[in-house]
Image 1: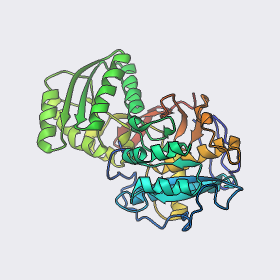
Image 2 (image 1 turned 120 degrees about the horizontal axis):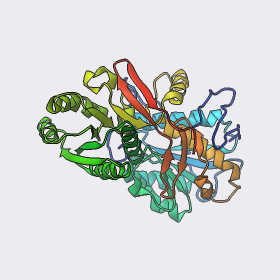
Image 3 (image 1 turned 90 degrees about the vertical axis):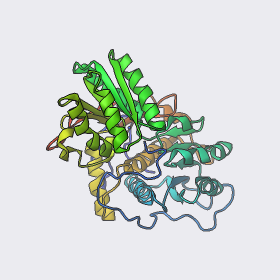
Length: 394
């Protein structure tokens, strides 16, 4: 792609783009919650897969590096996958597209088959897949072909020597909101955790983050999302006095539980949430959510991307669309050092200065998970406000 001024801490959009401010569980879900409430119908893929792939080396296109985008384009997550693909196409256009050729591969029929086709077609980098189980399905074949994977999952258990994760991390989100709460004088924390892998992970993160911040976890309860289970867990929590409670679940669950928590506690308590809340609009419409805090990426620049997305595609993007956009920006930046017929320069991903994108500053840690600059948001009757801005860089 064109180099277009994409630096480590700031990025200027091409003339046909817009200004970007430089500068966290979908990995195991079968369906994904959109940022917008309007239903999205998946349009045809913006980039077609070659019908007769050439085995081995780069097929026909020696002037550009071939990059595969592995997302679901059919099935229950098709709208999300297409939204990511559309945003990736916007990024390709915004950066000129002269160095890269992005080809879409549908993971819904099988991520392993999609990756095999992408590798046979000569792609030197895989962007995606979206779900953790799909990342596991493609990583071994990609490693054997010496092709790195920059996946959209946030499940750190799927990382590998050749697998990097760009997804929004619950680890970082919980740690950020806990540290902010401690800075405001809150010391006694409780946790309301769903049963399953996400809840278990969130429980461990909460304990470590609270201890590191100098607070105390005084209570922790699990539930199975049934009304009876939620009520029982909240009733048990109320037996202990706490300053704040982390609801490690979607915004929809938080809306259901917030009034029950306040009633059981005998008055409003500080609610804390995770990065999942950023994917759901309308939380401010629930009175019991007023004053709740959660940490996530800043939405300001995503709003600009969403405006351009609607102008081009006639519909609103899913919140995860930014991952497709930023993955292409990152690839374009690193591709400056990608020599023809050489493997993708994966060592360039560990630039400690980080990168800038729609979701703010980010860099990859030694654990291959994107470390992000996160803001703390407060929910209020008139909408959300930022009470602690995200750092501009590292």
